[in-house]
Image (cartoon, rainbow, N blue to C red; front, side, top):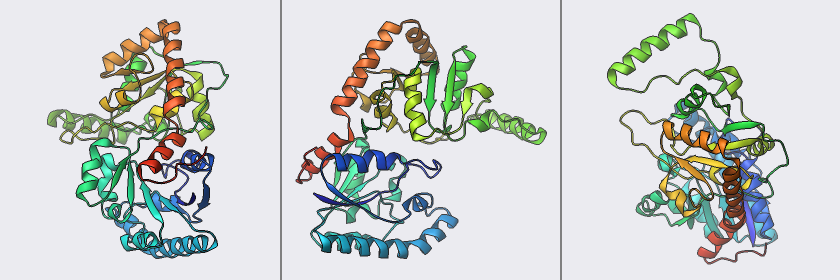
Length: 375
């Protein structure tokens, strides 16, 4: 098939230089044998301003949207005239363009898909545009009915990993426990629990280094007063402070894959965002749940029931449900390297067999009644 691909390079505006989406989605489509034409536009800037709840972000997208729409129509039309386009494959928010523009592209005989992986807690950011696409690729099973109620056609398409990018490296396993990802929600408390249990742990990603930075006297006072108020009201306290050697900044894409191979145990967390005391706790299967096992990591994941559809627990990955259980399982598997190695190898094999982006996307196209590719 001939595919027009309109997806930015990075999953987060804060990960400067990351090309995770391109290395996963774009590269997998090419591997499947498709002729892929890339949209030439700075979509990463748009991802950073996708939420219109912020006046600054709304003003930015109001200004940039006409430029984005004109570029998309112009480039798709030109590519379609050169040789017919079969599929428009996007990662678009409602703020990116008007639904009628997507419908216009669809009227040219092009099947339109939108991939989106934040609907677990930000469905409202695609609710308006989703019905304009022929298909919405949805990795959150519990959100499928929300798409249908909005008038969209969802296809369940879980996240995955590209084995050309994520692979086991021949490096020394010199880190007992590692986590790669942002420092939000309860993650810092889990890491602090491991530190207090004398476990060698490393946490890399946005926000971790701030948890070890010295506080000014004013900040210390505000922190203490805030903790008192939150304790009285039953709210969660400030994130705990962490020793400098435990935390690090964001890793490059390549450094992240290497860290998966360096760690004896790789952690994963399933809670989305930073829910308040009255907010529902949302858990979902995440990109990391496939990247780490495919990179040859022993994976220890905060339990979410949907993961059992993709890995056999205690044979291919291991899960925990509390901080006490995390410490217990970390200590156990660090002390039992043979069991850890057997689970690591089985998880790696399962990821390579069943959880590649090549397979996910081929299955999604087949479910939509399209050619699945030859790769």
